[in-house]
Length: 112
Ligand code: AMP
Ligand code: ZN
Image 1: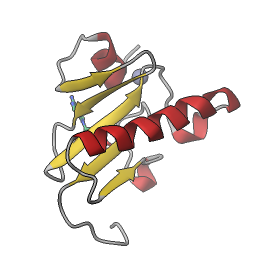
Image 2: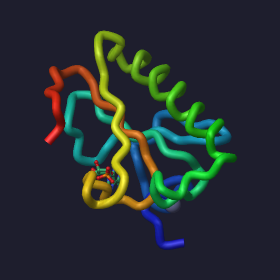
Image 3: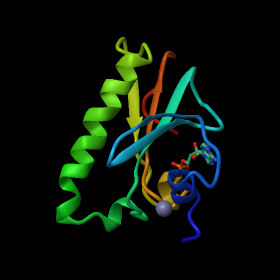
C-alpha cells in the first residue's frame, strides 16, 4: 500500500519511534511544532476520521489513553494538546489517521 505511515509501521521508512504495542506506534514528528511533538498512529490503515467504523471505538480509546500516558512520560503533565486533523480543510496531509501530541510550550486558542 502506498501509505507513508504504513511504511513506518512496517519499518520500511525510518522514524524516531519510541513506543510500540500490538495496536499502535508513537514516533517524533519530523517537523516538530513544539519542544515535544509526537504522532500516535494505529498500525491498522484508516485513511481519515470519516472512515472510522463502530469496531474502531476501542482502538480510538486506546490511542487517547496511550497519548496521555506518553505525554506524561515526556514531561508534559503541565499541559499538552492532542490534535487529529480530518481532510484538507483541517490540514490533514498524511492519509493514515494520527494523533498529534504537542507540549512544553504555551498553546494559543483558537488554532489557526
Ligand atoms: P497532518 O498534517 O495532520 O496530516 O500531519 C502529518 C504530520 O506528519 C506532519 O506534522 C508532518 O510533519 C509529519 N510527518 C510527515 N512525514 C513524516 C515522517 N517521515 N516522519 C515523521 N513525521 C512525519
Ligand atoms: Zn497507512
